[in-house]
Length: 269
Picture 1 (cartoon, one colour):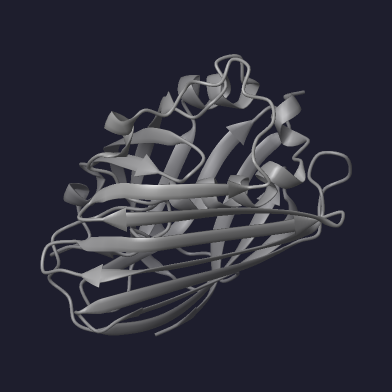
Picture 2: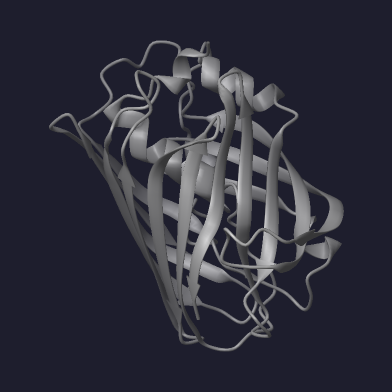
């Protein structure tokens, strides 16, 4: 059993944000203003343990994304608690440019928070509370790692001309305030979502992902090693009507305890 599944407070919310953040892309914008509420269920081995709500507003000048999660836990594998996030930024013609990211988690009366400031596509400052005490074997974050990066939430909404393989042709440079990593994506196939238990039925695009750790992680981290070598990091995209925007329909991470999955269960446009 992988020890990373026994999630502590310091990584409880971040782990959820990482799952969500695997979907975060910046693509050329061909869309109109939008207000969207999406709800997701996260499960491990078929057992639901978290509910996530994401609200997105974009007036083609400024955008705002808020995320709230309630975690009921899965035995000794995942601790119960709550997590929230807020990101704001500028909506440009070709991409979303974050200016601020705040993440907060709470479980077993312990609180953890991350804040990041972005300026012109670079991370200009970040803060973690409480500070990480154990820095042994942690790969140092250098100034060069803060250049030309995006955040793991602000790129949640995809913008594109069509639901096709071009959505998967991405090499993402993510800085969360805790870690700097890349997500390399490739197109797998087109599929049809048919489950009546989800909030969408129709065509979707399946993309495979490759997690590449850069800095901020622990060199001997079991989760880092597992994710970097995983062949089962998958994401499906669904369209938001004819708006030219696309959101994750499903995200899947294979683990020894079963599939860790996030599925779209509610959608208001």
